[in-house]
Length: 333
Image (cartoon, rainbow, N blue to C red):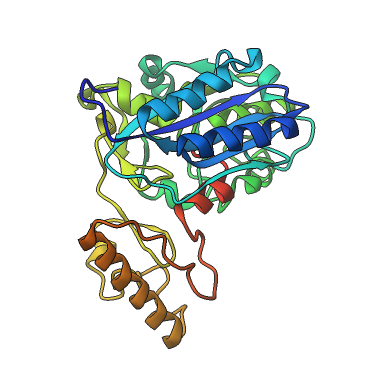
């Protein structure tokens, strides 16, 4: 952490580990977070733990210490981001079938993931023309930044990835002939599962970026970087750039899509109400409700108060709150 202690600390964490008793951990973990005033989302599944939490630094670190007191989490890794505001409205510890949803039974990333490549070695790997570089994130994430030579599978959810692999493994596809494959994601969790999946499909040389894009941006100097654009993150920062500096994007408060300068200049962008991605999808009544919600949020900000806000009306958007982003995507780490 910085020498000046931040007001709040956001921590993203995950670990694939055999956790058959995950249900017994839910209640004590929820209680501890509530007692400490820590908010966010933690997912527990038989394959491990995943999530993002935020709170006063001492309280967040207390939760991490509690987790690591379990020998299975002794090597739990996390990523820190200081912030001056609490990015979550509540704390939820949830039980799931998977900590990142791929929908392929029998995978065991804890035992059969691909080869880790440290950020310092990543450029040399993806510069090799014999290596197929795949961005495993969703289409809207890839749209605001990615690595040179990276292929965008254009998936709307991670569960679509196996179908893309099957399609691209056919003659003429980018994965035909069992090439060497390097994959990356935001923090590493998807890649552990996607590399395990490719290995289960007979791919021999599969690599993934250790620590994900976030570790690369933190570690590799901008002048040496092969990354272009911003990296979408699953909290109120929206996106980050090199050195994990705040990025250049805002969220549409109606559909939760990341918006860059072009989208913000669009005539379809109305703060808190619509953007080019969701323009025309709301009824006049819903737009009035969104406008009123934005007005109340602005008033709360002026008073220095927190404002949870109502859920977006009708025609459900991709996300409804910062908490639900983690709930739906499962891949904030």
